[in-house]
Image (cartoon, rainbow, N blue to C red; front, side, top):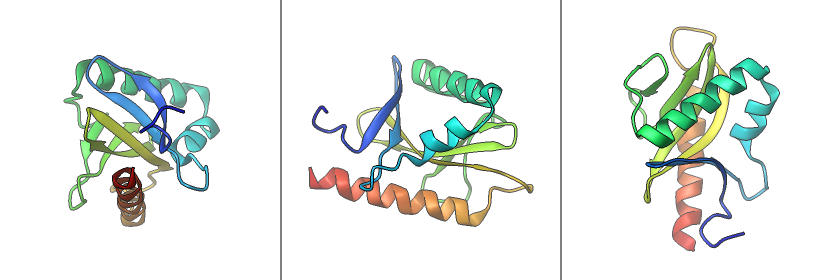
Amino acid sequence: MAKGKETTTLAYSGNIFDIEFYRQESGEVLAEEWLESMPLDIQQKFAALFAWMGDHGRINNEQKFKHLTGSDQIFEFKAGQGRVMCFFFVGQRIILTHGCIKKGKKTPKGEIERAEALKQEFTSREMEK
């Protein structure tokens, strides 16, 4: 694997952003595993969102992508009730942490905290390189 990429697996390489799945030290790739467990139509919706963001750099529709208020710069891609949490990283990279199904009006605080913990873990591993 190329240096600098062992903490991620590429989901989409666009003109503006690379969208990457975070690979934990254990080898788990939570966002990718979650997406693969979803119905094909949901997978296709997320793939289209990743491609749009990668190529155009911005999704202005908060029904598709938004910052999670009160979080440490955690964002979510949205398709139906499905959510894939992410954050921006140096070098025009968007790192996907994990996915979940949103059952209420707000994304559960525990899911935001999980994304923040994965972001910290990723960042510290990147800084060690």
